[in-house]
Image (tube, rainbow, N blue to C red):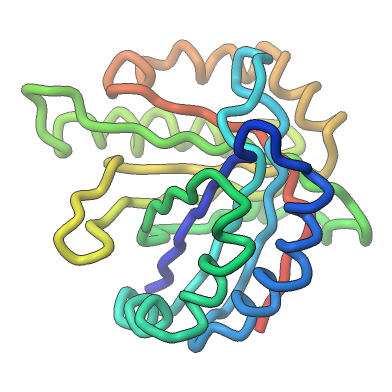
Length: 226
């Protein structure tokens, strides 16, 4: 099993992006990379929402651990407080955390290795089960109809399917599931996002079967692995 924590945050009104970015790189990132059990860290820069409007978040991160127990150990460590507290914690609005089990990270079998130095562009959605329905009523539309359509998209680099879980203990998950699609460049993403192939998955019944989804579009600026 792999689990992922998605952390997102904003700039407070009047904050200096340059100052917050310096704090992120000089104090926050070293503390995060030193967390016990951290396997992978992706840095996100949010670009827009799915309708072309301003993004909901300024920046974010994806932290990967082997299992929920490893995540709990990291979150209980002094390093977690160093990462999200101090001058960096005082300089941001947020953060907000979501925790997911990674069901599958699919890479098309014919996909070539990603070129060096690419600025991966990704879309991520988070959604809920509508009131009066059960997860087993909405999951088949997603897993049996929507997922195959997404994985047939041209130029797809990676498609990750996730399921939210309650974290920290005693705090209910804000979502039911999440997914991410990645492309090698902004140009590839924009081309596919505006294509008939993407129109088909917009209209496959998934959006009507769930509450939401909330969709973000962002650049994956750096991927670090332990």
